[in-house]
Length: 401
Image (spheres, helix red, strand yellow):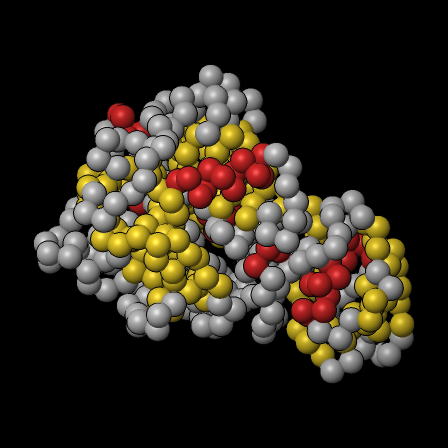
């Protein structure tokens, strides 16, 4: 059984790396943008996607279901689980073997809930997810992986249909939590959050933008376990693992696009934020307890910026890289980026950044982790003829991490 984060875009190129995951690994040529603290993980789509509507879909997948984007979960921390990735079919069923069919969310279930659409400009894709309104002025709670790599974000209020542009306030990639801020919003109804504790056997309902259709659906189930830990790894490479802990497990049929949406308790209050789901039969959904998510959101809004919580957007150089014996080879340069402005081109080898020798992509990511957009750094490289070049660049603002 494989658990999959629920951000439903297929990625035609290796993805822009997430600053906070602190990963190291292989990098292939492609539109991989270097962001501050980038760990250079690789996401590679099996099928070339066709972008239609609100999300990128694999050509071989049914139009009503979207293949997962981002990570696939390889199994539980206790060593159980494993299997093939979710194939986009509605194969889920609760533990009693009966099939569940999502139905339209009620008016009450839509109150304070939003649909999130993102453009992943450096990946040539779009994605969709869900979020919850925290404040009347438009602070939105969602999963980090819903906005990871986004260069543009729009948010639609489910109950009214009003749509707003959004920016990232901050993220906790290791906890898979993000806070967005809507532009021009006021007087919004907020999500009803529970102050109670979850219990095994409690009836729950998962609500979200399943399939990226732009309308909320609801799937009923119950809590089957608490305090679950699952290990996330990059889909396609199977590496760069990270753990999500303390999760609520449910047999509600959580689907791609539900990420960031509410897991309602029996009293209609939100007890968790839908985050992941398994493949196979029966389906196992996972949610971050709402108390955990809100605590991190409060830290983000208070301006905390540390090893796990990051404010705003990461610094951005704008190159696709691969390790070279003498440094880090440039495979491609993002048009209009600081790297292009400095004169970097494919085939060049970066040997130093900010006065520090660079020999690996991970080393470059470590140096970038100490910088913010607007910082000026020196960069030195050699071209294919062996000629040395150098420049001082102003780091740009990268895609959401």
